Image (cartoon, rainbow, N blue to C red):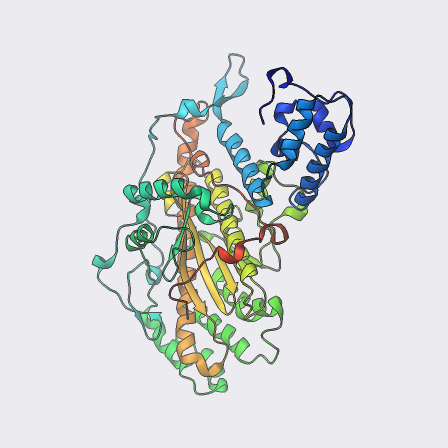
Length: 541
């Protein structure tokens, strides 16, 4: 409804209490629900009390309509506002996050001015000052060699799921992160379809969710999605031949007693063999368990996940990173840091609690992998499973953003090689997802691996090779991530002194890597999740 010009700045003349003060302090042109939500009920946890605030807005408009000595045009406008549809909780959360992100991106404080008196002052650099400026220090990503046995090879899955072979490099396709034409097509498609996306869907945030066995449903263009898959670089990690005799000896054990004896017979004392031994010990634990394996989430974690993640973390020793697993309900510090910087952290109750986190305790305690467990082993509740998937996606983005801020002067090319992981345990499966930065504003959510857990000893011939390869690959991928972080740190420290007393004339990583930061809460944010995927085609088995 159009407000008459002479009433554009009208405010309710009599002072009111509580949320009604909003209409006394703000002119009628600003009486939208969005402004009301931002400006009132500051003592409430607004995410949890969204419905309460929505009801309060309607009640306060009714109060205006029933008040005396109010111009009829104002009463009519209040009535019009009460009939307008208000945003959903998810739409409001995304909107506030976008506004906070925009404010952060606009306040780019790098310029340092040395005054004659010797004092130092900091000035602001606006977006306009950065337009059309080419980054002079853009460097190609540095490839980091891992241990000899963990080098990246393109291999063929052999021995019932374990990769011990090598195929020709001709089969390795171009990395889509460097395929500018593909990203332009994605940009055009996502812009065209943006009004059809759920506020929390990856596509709504320029995240391309993909991977072997992952469907383009429900939002992505199938043809473009297939082009994306066909240009993706696939890394595989062969298990060294020195370990295969030991693996065969354990797997081929005819009974559980021989299995136990064989796993303790290591051919040599090496990091690789000791890692494999820990894998077999973890399997022995659930093979011999007498408790009900379906009895709750805690059982799922203690039997099928924690022993293996502990071994993975202990096996990531590159760069003296101090990788360790935190169990229980550890707080994802990256999410808290980002929400605090955006002024969106309400209280400690709004912290992101994972089911486990692998952190690099000797590298600024950077989080590189976290765990989300969707209920007990075998749970099939689709809403819970899909909610945890989307929660984990945004948690990964918060980690990426934190690393970009920490090493802001490092090169974009190196940062594109960085992967952050979340392990999603759902039903009887473990899904290892990675999140990485591709182009400005674009991210890739890629399912690296999945493992269907077979808890029976008689299924070991098929399950154990797949299980070993799954966690072997996880360890190798984490080693790559640690090595990339080490390079980012080195580049950052080399570049940073150049801009100690003057502003940096090109966008740093903290400027370029700027995803929306969303901390989802199941009670408020799970609506519609059952239809948001991920969908599997063919269904993983």
